[in-house]
Amino acid sequence: TQLLEQSPQFLSIQEGENLTVYCNSSSVFSSLQWYRQEPGEGPVLLVTVVTGGEVKKLKRLTFQFGDARKDSSLHITAAQPGDTGLYLCAGKYNFNKFYFGSGTKLNVKP
Amino acid sequence: DADVTQTPRNRITKTGKRIMLECSQTKGHDRMYWYRQDPGLGLRLIYYSFDVKDINKGEISDGYSVSRQAQAKFSLSLESAIPNQTALYFCATSQTGGSTDTQYFGPGTRLTVL
Image 1 (tube, rainbow over the protein chains, first blue to last red):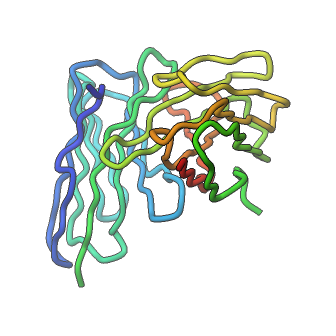
Image 2: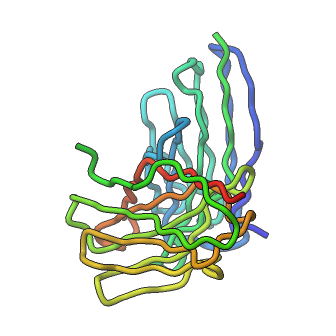
């Protein structure tokens, strides 16, 4: 079993639609990160959230850390084809190492 | 030039062969990591090193070994490769280890074990 569960696993939407990706755990994390990975490349960090209830915005992307620091969500407004990729959440446990979720593969069709 | 490089980028090998994947970084980071990525399983930590004299097992270290030759170099070895080690392998580095620590990933090595 994975420490972090992501849902949905796959998402295919039309350009302009909104979407939300979820990252859930039964464990408390000291911080949580979201990465995006494109084919043939390594993951690239989008954001880090640290405080329970924290909300961060990155253009059309909104990230939220749950109050209990066990879950997080990524919301994309008006998705564009350039948002296509694999989205990964990663939780830092005991200030030590990172645990990654299984990923959400997003396809935004023009 | 890329900050984190991995060689080779692709490798096909046979069951039972010993192979080594190499990682080099120019970021000056102390912390280095090896992950494998499988479809539907995300990234899983194999080994990590917080400095040249430090080596730690991750979630799935069986069948793998590592060597931290210098601050900038961290290599992963498969002593006797088996088909279920077919995967995408990533090296990563990070600086501080604090809550906002950022990992920087290499481009990956696609390994196929026949």
